[in-house]
Length: 141
Image (cartoon, rainbow, N blue to C red):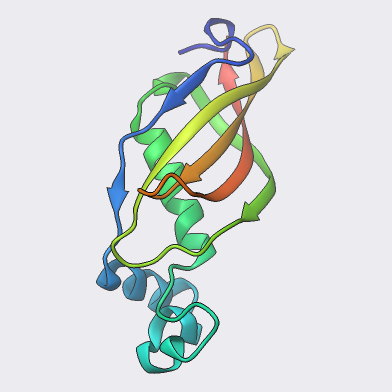
C-alpha cells in the first residue's frame, strides 16, 4: 500500500507465531546471552521462574509478523525510527505471539514519499500485551 492509501486509526492484525525454548535459546545465544534466556537452572530460581525470550527477540518477531502481512509491499523504502519501546510482560517458551498494528500518523515528506507511523502492540495467546512500540517508515505516495 502507498502512503495515501492508509488512514489514521486503520488497524491490521497479524498471524501468530509460537516460540519454542530452542528458538529462545538460539536467538539469545547469538544476540542476548544473558542467563534468563539461556540457563534453565538459574532462570528457574530467578524472578520469572523460567527461561524467557529476550526483549530484542520479541521486538524482532513483532516486526517480522508485521512485515510478513505484506501491507507495505514494495512501496516501503526504509525504516526511519522506532520509539517508545516497552517490554511489558515476559514471553515464555510455548507463547504464541500476534501483533495488532494501528496507523497513528501520516506525514507527506516530498512529492513522492511520506512517513507512515504505526503502533505495534504484541500479545501472547492469553491476550496479554507483552510489547508496545511505534515504528515509522519512509514509504511511496
